[in-house]
Length: 460
Ligand SMILES: NC(=O)c1ccc[n+]([C@@H]2O[C@H](COP(=O)([O-])OP(=O)(O)OC[C@H]3O[C@@H](n4cnc5c(N)ncnc54)[C@H](O)[C@@H]3O)[C@@H](O)[C@H]2O)c1
Image (cartoon, rainbow, N blue to C red; front, side):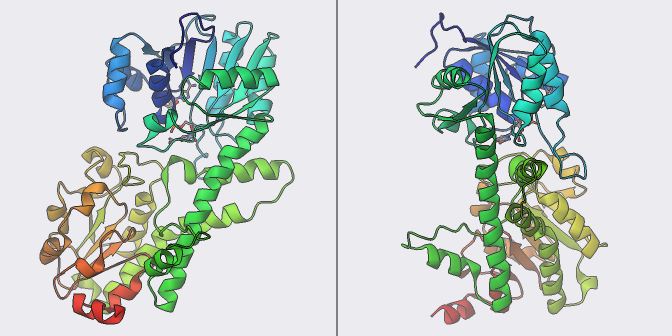
């Protein structure tokens, strides 16, 4: 359904053109909204004005260029004149404060104040940034009320996956919790131009809570899989086999495989949930425990790799280590380093292997960004593997699947190990050089089995 020129909420201002704001702005422009984006970062504004995407996201470059050149999407550092837009959508970041587990709400507060100055009667305000329960009412509503004008307000969380955002904006159900039933209905009508399903919930707080619970559940699911990995290593069985066989054809099990959990949302949303609950006198246990398990992965990884290498030879021989994939995830591929476990992993490796040269290869991340993590950049997997004593796969970039690990293993240092935090290769299909081993998170059992023949024996 396209937006008619007479639709009263056709003129939209999106505040904050990051991953969430820009993809939403493009999706809205595509269905006929006239969208203006306000963004603090001059470089981002300049890139968008020239019709390019400032970050990697499937389909974004071409679709952004089309909307910018058609004049449906504009961007600026300054706010538009009051009255130019009927709808304001807030998509600024809500990171945790540096070294803290508490949300930094500076941007939200700033935008709420500006909104109250820019407000015209009956504007619609949609808050989309992830916030602790209560922020829509206590900060945004409180600021808007100072204008003395009537307005509509709703919290409409963003739930898309990076790499699939443009697709999911048109397909995922949109949760809507309004300040009043009228706000909810108006916001619902607005989002129906994008997606066929809108789910209207009782109030602002319910919608805020849904977003946080969705993400915390995901984080906890992965945390349990990661703890299963640790338990399976202790017992001496493969977590992959335990999880996959347990899931197979059994409708009451759907456990994910273990792996690093990072990114701009899961690393913080359980803390944002806890912040809101404890502020209201509630208690939070499992979400914090889940974070603890997932955040322990880098130090556990460095320790496993160190212990395994020591069992295989003296540590002075270890001169080079490799990290494959530094983005927070590999599929869908992204260049996003926010919340990536590569950062704490590199820190842990530098502690455990202070004299070892650390090299990283990520086909989706610009070299300068890789370098900013304090490692050397490799331009190819073969260059990275050359002479390395250990290789750690931190993500599962789609390109890694097509690498010939058997051939690459030939150039590794003697007694090297390949540790895969995603268990993305079928160990039975690998023909590594005899003195090298491949194993991963929850599959340490493979390290004690050298060669494909040995593996086949144990499986039979
Ligand atoms: N990235 C995701 O996949 C995702 C998914 C769901 C929800 N979220 C949530 O959505 C929100 C935004 O996330 P993001 O990934 O787009 O963040 P981001 O940091 O990529 O983008 C935020 C943008 O807002 C801009 N900004 C900050 N203050 C501003 C101001 N006062 N005026 C104008 N612009 C301002 C920043 O410069 C930045 O470009 C966060 O609350 C996040 O938790 C993100």
